Image (cartoon, rainbow, N blue to C red; front, top):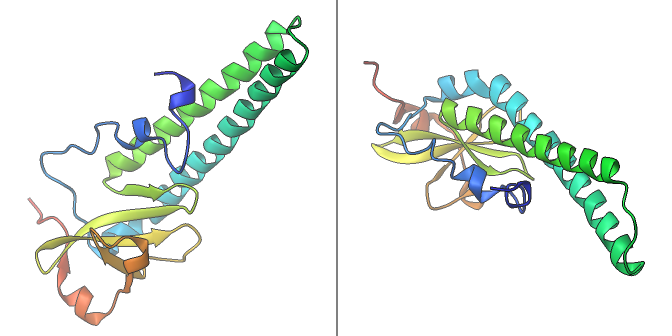
Length: 170
């Protein structure tokens, strides 16, 4: 897979579906467990966002070089400079992939990299739902049904707390 196919849109699909999610036993979190992971998840998410920014900057630089070559009808390119830009782009793609894999290994899911949305699976009344956190929020204060998404967020209240659970301790 080349670097161009790794970073685009909200979250690169080759990274989003890297196969780490296909667990035999899904991880479900209690609110307390999920909030305890927020510092690490936030650090990794910020790393993803920084990597995406670096990737996009390098990609734009490469497009600018290509445009100049096209407009000039061809020209001698500074191979060393272009190689350095490509190396930065590939390094950023690897950094994103690594951070996404670490987040997935924790058991949560990046839903939107641009907004910094992360979901933590949990069980509510024995059905899978998501504890929903957005970068910048001080804690996890919302949850939503699997098919509802961010727009369907509901506040974590006493009724939710009394009826949600994580994986049973084995």
